[in-house]
Length: 605
Image (cartoon, rainbow, N blue to C red; front, side, top):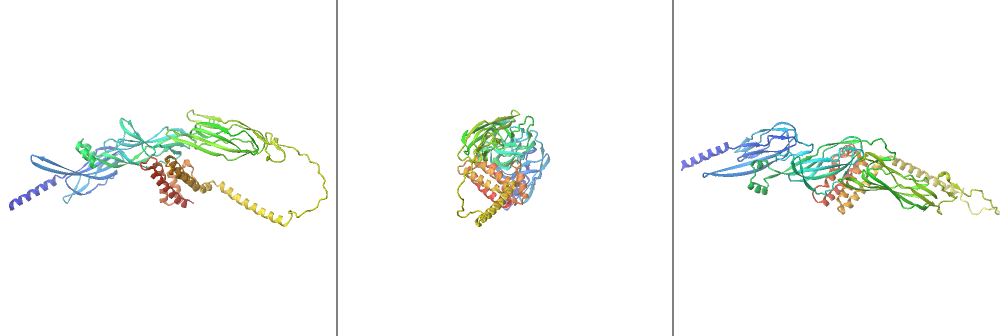
């Protein structure tokens, strides 16, 4: 029995040593990839081990890993039972630059001894099939499983002409958790987000470069260039989670049992974070042509109509009437300047009430802008309101167009309170006539005598005179200070910034209560950009994430507050199409907006 025990122990030792000799630890990956492609690197151990040590992937970007998985197989051949354990450690990498690189060895402990894996070389080449759009490949071998593309409807435009920029996501694998990692600054452009997905991506199918994709519109932006030259739109970066089928499974071919059980246990697919980046776009912006440029042109670009209306043409002096001028059409409606009509010199004209109503969609911005004037004729007579000219540039026809409002004949009758002296207006300042100007006969009366006490030259008279002088001096000082303050536009904008932002935020809150997403995000975005524009004295056309950050740092605003403000701007742009509860998104964004503006106000005063 003792000899049999020794023999069994000897055989177990031999088999153990043989098993250890048969342990293999190898690296599995592609031999060639393209720049920007994501690929899988797996370290496969044919045996049992522990304390896996990952290598240093210096020449690649690590997107995820290590992800570990185990499998075992049992074979019975002629009554002989063989059991094999396999452990796999996977990484997802992205190729950064061209060249030939070595995938380094990993180490693992097997039977208290460290074992090194094999190494392999991989060739990274330029993606010659790239169309210029931001791409990230999957492990299926296709370099464009999911990618983001920026598509402008035109690459040449005039100053003030609308450009619609659409960001589309193409994908052949499931994706989720979309979020903007970095939004472009759109330097040199006035921008308007016109995305209409209501927080849900609407997908369709398309064949692109011979490959069928699902495609969804992530964001749509209307751009209006503010200066001539070549303007570059920086890439938009979006991160997402992609569900990728493991490369190892693809190499084994289709196994219905493994696919079925693998999908249930979650081993057939891996969730990997992907960074999608659109391509940069150059826009050639042309200046307005000088030939045939009318004097009434104030920068309107598009296709417009110009109308006017008046509530009455017959009235009495000192009675008010209303005249309205309206521009309607498609173009830079929010930025255009309405023409100023000419009124007779003796008409009192109040500042107009400007109203803008726009409709924003993938076709651009359209709507109406009107100026409503309240006018009071102070004298009687017959007057003519001459037509007012409105000029715009039509890029489709490549020419200027001048439109005229209606002409109005006004009849103003004399009112009882027009004034004494018999003044009659007869068509101009030089035509003022005065009747009854002869000196009337002085009638004689009886003896004159003093009654009561006269105010003139009395002590009370001089006291009242001194009080009036003091009041006049104080009013003059106040007037000069207010006038000086109003002349300092920088100071005026700075002082009014918070008040205007609060009004915008109140409007956003009203839309929040009725869950009107489009108007909420529009008002909230205008509150943020308008506040920082007025506080930092930056024109809207020059606003960008970079300029805001630079100016806030220059004002010694703490870095954490600056970063919170930038993040809030980014989140506002993304929240329109991010998945999730719309009401909760709007409420969270609104609360963060109040908090960040309050902090910024304390540091920017």
